[in-house]
Amino acid sequence: MVEEKISLPKMDIEGYLADGAAVVAKTPEIEAIADKLHDRGYSNLIYLGMGGTYDELGPQVYFVDKYAPELDAFLVNAAEFDVLGNKHLNKDSIVITASASGDTKEIVAAVKKMVDAGIEVVAFTKADTTLGKLATTVIPSPAITGRCDFSYYMFNILTLRLLNRRGDFPDYDAYVAQTKNIFNDLLEIRKSFDPRAEEIARAYAHESYSIFVGSGALWGETVLFSMCILEEMQWVRTRAVSSPDFFHGTLELVEPGVPVFLFKGEDECRALDNRVEMFCREHTDKLVIIDTAEYAIDGLDPKFRVLVSPMILTALTTERLSRHYETYTRHNLQYRRYYRQFDY
Image (cartoon, rainbow, N blue to C red; front, side, top):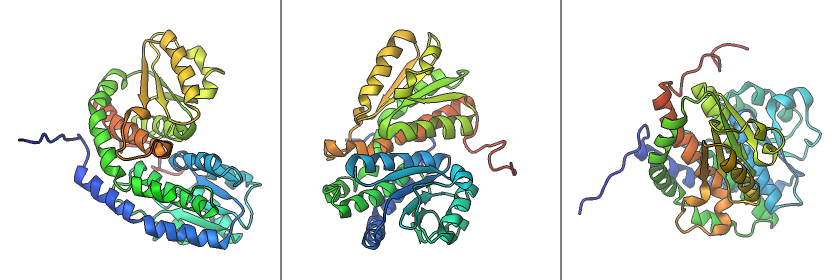
């Protein structure tokens, strides 16, 4: 019997699986850091981001609110912090941030102020970078490919371990055990979605603008794909709006011929997504629905699906849909004319 080998254009499958295994192997190290932070004690969690990292860290605040209602967690924009400060930040806060480059200037400036004030800063970045040298604790990613699903995995481990030590997430060990092979599952999800990703890109890559809608745990990834991928990397005009806000302005832009992408999640906000879907089915002929509930993770308890839904969505969109957009726009995802090209 000949086994069919499915390839994914523009993806190093062996490299991805090797990096995924290295990320999972990082779990004990991240747990030890979380345990140390718990033993030290803290008043609240501040998730500090900028651009894409702000969007990636967003789900963590959602998870804290969901599983630990008595623990305060805040998502803070680094550029805004640099000019406004933040009243929730105090000497007993734990700040969690990330930067793949390690030199995101807004984050570096914010972290310097925080460290100078004696505040604990945990940074997911390379140790030998500007940010890595500033932060009090560094968690370097072992992954060469630097994919968002790797970041989501490591962020989850840190946050959920902290919650577990507080007694707020007793199912932590089961979650870790059931996600140890998640990158194999995410690879299969990529393969199953890829033909549809090609169809979507072929149909919509040259639209004058598109509306992107999401909510709950998927809101950050919705913004990340529309802003960081399509706007920054493809120069495609988009409008990202949350499902609850959709009915307070953006709905008036929906008509036949206007593309609306709805990213449906698996949390309490799915009811809001359904409302958007019902409206758009009646008012546009270009509705694209990507629903994470349609993609299986083997052996995963349904109660954990919300925790991995951002990983699923990024595998589908940021990873696969973006590659096909690149093909049809003939615009290299790595090309920039402004971003990091000069001072501004």
